[in-house]
Length: 158
Image (cartoon, rainbow, N blue to C red):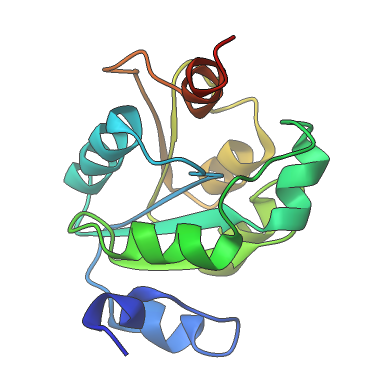
């Protein structure tokens, strides 16, 4: 096993791994299908808010339910987890199958929960849950106007 793969958690080992991470723990979530500059900048900014960064990614089935397109995700969950785990800014990666990351938030109880762009953090279920137990929420402004959807359009010549 490669060293970065030790950052990839299963339901069985994530609680013990989480207990070893230094606080404050920052949690974010997303698809992270075709990793681009916007993603890595956002993840570095998220990590800078705390001591540890946990990234929860949508399983392939939950990506399908998000309606991002019939061919999405491009990369399977295991590959997306490995790529994220290889980043220096990421301390732990796990997958979730629900339509939102609310269950992950309730289970992990991060000190800080972050999303990108223009999310109204107090209006989303995950943000409400974190605020209810006294955690902090942050929306990180986009630094680079890139997206997986834009990249796919360009690759397809659309």
